[in-house]
Image (tube, rainbow, N blue to C red; front, side, top):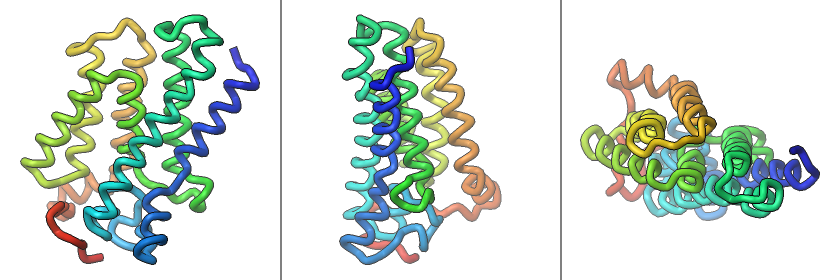
Length: 216
């Protein structure tokens, strides 16, 4: 049921996702707008590439936290609205709020609607909704990253792992979670279209996490 509280929570989730951590940290500590360098995205990967790990790590953690925190707004409206935290209606609240946060990251009102690709924020959302599937995604992401050194390829692999995880490895009776998992695959493919093209041409940049600062 749509209420003033649920609509307010959606707006808050979007605003939470809209916090442009990469832009604000880059400007505050380095006087650099990361969107003007590297891939041009305001996300953790480009921050690692442009400013190095000292800026990239906090941006990544904060972007994950945005998704996790926004999704957990459901705790304040879902339990009272549905009467049970473990109900399907409650989970749907979580999904709606998490998606609002991801849209905020992709199109942040606080940064001229020029955001990142949403992978870290998506992961924070998954972490809040299905912890075990999120851990599986982490394992796949790290494994692919160590082998390939491509963050984009690792993100795509992790995105495809989630629907497999909630369908076969840790099956859930809530159909909306499975449908959402399929939507994640489509979203990540769309936002990583240029990366996929560069991967095919062999021109995708590899990230060196031991480098203090990457060349713009």
